[in-house]
Image (tube, rainbow, N blue to C red):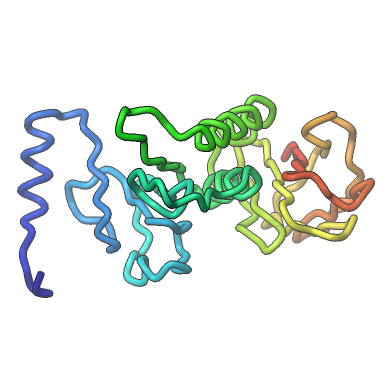
Length: 223
């Protein structure tokens, strides 16, 4: 369509809400949020990123954020598309979405009979099994006070800061905490205490080993 084409989005949104007030409108127009929308989505990318080229003009607004991604490379069912993301890639994407303050919509195209491909079911189950263990560090959280880094992200729920270490090859990790003090630190999985020191700007975690898990989570209790 021409650049000046008028989609009359506000009229459409108002009409939708007049019919179903509880309906959530999230438009995939790759732009900053517009009036009448209830959330902002980022197609195949994390908020603030533009690795796919879709989000060059998608300025982050004040609405709840969502990132949407495909399990393989197709939005709909494609019998020839077997390039499914690994369990590690999917779980890392989920964690990074949460650390970027966003919900994750993970798409899979069903077969013509309405069923999901077996590999998609396996991947969803793997994500579900992981969440059964680590869900506390994802559900109900927001992006943590330590912004996303090369090594991973943080999520936060009240005074609990969850440090998700996804890619790190050292036993010491410094976290800038903007003056927030840490009361305690422990490995999320086995609750083993983690030694740390802190200064006016942050905290230095002293891990017992170089993290080698899919997601090594350290739980901090903030003062």
